[in-house]
Amino acid sequence: MEVKGRAPGKIILAGEHAVVHGAAAIAASIDLYTEVHLALRPSGQEDDLLEIDLKDMKLNLSWPCSQLKEVLGDCSGDTTLPRLCTSEKLDLLAGIVAEKKLPQENIQLSSGLCAFLFLYTSILGFKPGKAVVTSELPMGSGLGSSASFCVALSGALIALSEKLFLNANEKKIDLELVSKWAYEGERIIHGKPSGIDNTVSTFGNMIKFKKEVTKTNSITPVNSTTPLKMLITDTRVGRNTKSLVASVSERALRHPHAMSSIFDAINSISDELALLVESPAADQVAISEKEEKLMELMEMNQGLLQCIGVSHESIETVVRTTMKSKLVSKLTGAGGGGCVLTFVPTQLSAAVTENIISQIEECGFRCFTVEVGGSGLQVFSC
Ligand SMILES: Nc1ncnc2c1ncn2[C@@H]1O[C@H](COP(=O)(O)OP(=O)(O)O)[C@@H](O)[C@H]1O
Ligand SMILES: C[C@@](O)(CCOP(=O)(O)O)CC(=O)O
Ligand SMILES: [Mg+2]
Image 1 (tube, rainbow, N blue to C red):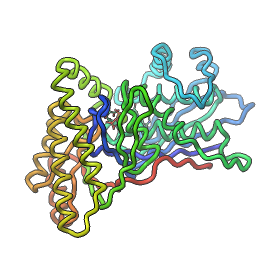
Image 2 (tube, rainbow, N blue to C red; image 1 turned 90 degrees about the vertical axis):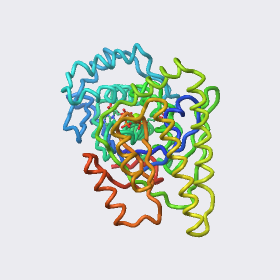
Image 3 (cartoon, rainbow, N blue to C red; image 1 turned 180 degrees about the horizontal axis):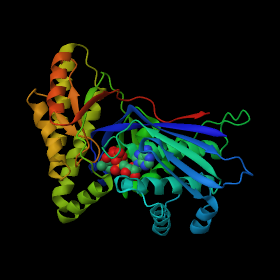
Image 4 (cartoon, rainbow, N blue to C red; image 1 turned 60 degrees about the vertical axis):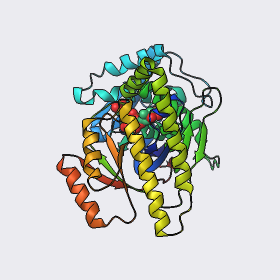
């Protein structure tokens, strides 16, 4: 049996980092996807390999399932109750991955491979199989490649474990369950994720997300009344979400009151932005007023992200370049490099937009546009 999971990346319009500390954030899916094609090897075959083929990286790795079983021990459990990967198990997984001696340029994939082995063995046990992964998302640049990988993989694994497409099984995939497993994968990659990325990648569209410690997270759909056009600049400066999230937590420990005031301010920006996006605008004057307010909120958010230490020279270059044309930019995702959003007002002519793109690209960055707020996880039988 073979299945394919396909899950989108995301942009964060407001609230990244603060969302890890309990503030609201607004995220939307984008039309760039990660696909995981998963096939079980027919039983009785001689090789008992679990194989992963990372097409974009031209990296193919495999482990005998008997070896995985010996090292990891019993991984069985109720797949409807996603479990945390303990630090002991993570050490074992890291050891299994380290044995492969990844080339230095691919070393950042180690955490993704640990998440793969954890999710696969927790959901399917030690059944031999092969996963082929492709992604349209630049990795480690703030567009949620880690979450889209974990969501596409978890979706395919759950579809296989529940034999969703076999024998006229009409049961629909349980998206909540997929998102929870993907969160456990994100935990391996990020350390302390808020859960916003796996949620928006699973459910798609635009959401307001607030992490709750004692109860379920608050997830509210945000229905935009006007199209939101975003230009994305990939600064191509590599960074790592895990270390940026950790650096913000360390700053919060050093300056608890100041940082908590910043998180409160970001929370207010997210609340206001959600209301604004949903507010009706009947004519062009109203649309332009709405866009001005939106840009002001993004500008304030970027200023606060700089305050918490996650901006970067490359991000500031994009902010300054677009400011010359009275446009507003803010980082998206963890910052420290990676991608920057520039809001494109409806009245901006194509010629001016092209000119701004050339100015940004002259700095060595890459620009592209995305559709905001499309579908979430899709699972197909192959
Ligand atoms: N297609 C993929 N295959 C394997 N691992 C992946 C894939 N996409 C992302 N990852 C993992 O996620 C990491 C990047 O995640 P992160 O630092 O959160 O940045 P972002 O989510 O913004 O792209 C990679 O270093 C890798 O470990
Ligand atoms: C910084 C953060 O808010 C978003 C991280 O997104 P990304 O991995 O950089 O795409 C972390 C989180 O919410 O888990
Ligand atoms: Mg990520």
